[in-house]
Image 1 (cartoon, one colour):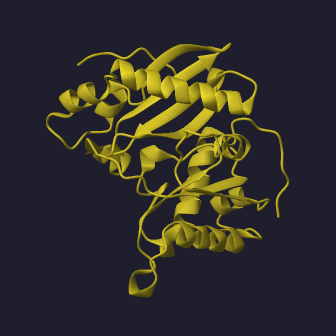
Image 2 (tube, rainbow, N blue to C red; image 1 turned 60 degrees about the vertical axis):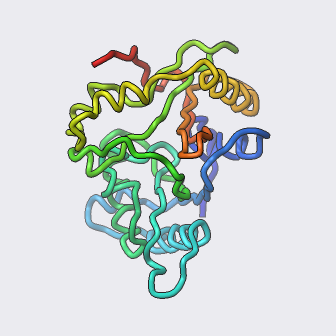
Length: 245
């Protein structure tokens, strides 16, 4: 059903290389690849293998979050392609709260991918992580903001560490908490120990891949653990200098 290609920014490339690295935590992840002409969905056509893909994604969701019984369609999972999640359209794209609507989320992610020029050959279902939501953004379809950071490893060195969420982008999302600036500022500060932890994890991840300059994204769960949630080539990753409110 698939034809593998070399694409370092595809989760199907980097995730298998880092998934078993000692000390690296990652969300429960299943990868499905397809050759289906999914962009035909934008013209109102259901391409060959579309139904098969949706069925595979639902089955992956059941393996990751088995519920059974009358509530078998419930239990949220995170859906993305190998290149992105369209998270700024949260409840339409990546946050699948009802598996009956999996095909609808696939179509929304295909549309988003087409709008930003990304491929849709790799599909990923991930388990929900227990995180503390600082607040949600109404303009981003309820996107929850959590404590996340991005580490850049280039030429064997840490060249930059930034909070994942820029203040300006969050403001555009219309946060639903009156003290969102204070909450975001507090969550965007790393202790020395935290910085050492995530940079060490980033080094281990890049070493497992073996080549190149990378950005590595981490999310902190309620219990204080850091999970590696995404990677991309450093040159293609968004970089900014944090500002204060």
